[in-house]
Length: 292
Image (tube, rainbow, N blue to C red):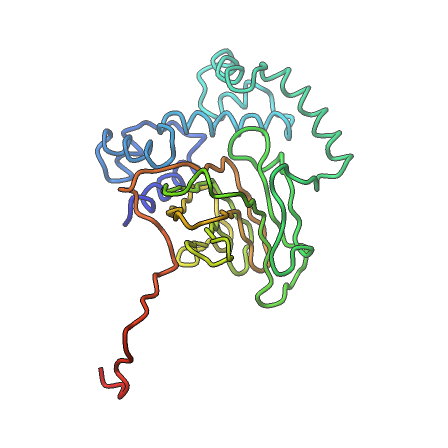
């Protein structure tokens, strides 16, 4: 099992046990590593320590409960393993800038106003594309969130999409600042009732629109219903590149959510996930009798 697969397995376990007491020893034992090795592996892959991740996920879920349920603050605090309402309030205020009660009042007003304007709002920097983009809804979701206050989503609006029908929520930009570098695209993704496949994708093109590097996770797609987990794509940006495109793709019916997307440089020791293999032109024909 690869390191990425191990981290995904442990994150899945964490998501199922957010309301239980979890120690670093518990999760390291689940992953099958020493505490020190697991801490280093998790930090490298996710960009934060295990304890930071656990705290962020608990506080994020607590924030959603404040907005979308009428549960008492003290009950929410205890459900997500805070020792007291005071401890919860200090931790919550550090992340959101307000104590839980004040946050609940302000955010409920904003959510109601946003729902009145309709939830399908365009997301800054993102646009939809694909074979049938108008059959899919793209927007921001304040109820299904991994970190912060909202996530992005792409959802099919047809019951039985035609075979091969897909859409993507994407960005496209110049490659000039990234030439010669190895770049990692990562995100937390969640899916619901995905019929065919959902995934991250990334592509590097030349000025003549030749595909130089590409990965759409076709060898590791998300299907069905999955909880939040961490996924990565790593590609080199060649000197003859012109544009970089990336995003989330949904093929068929279902819904995919994305949160905490990162685009960052990594060292050359990090293996690439490029699915485009270099084609080498031979000097002469070979194996014409089909015997080799």
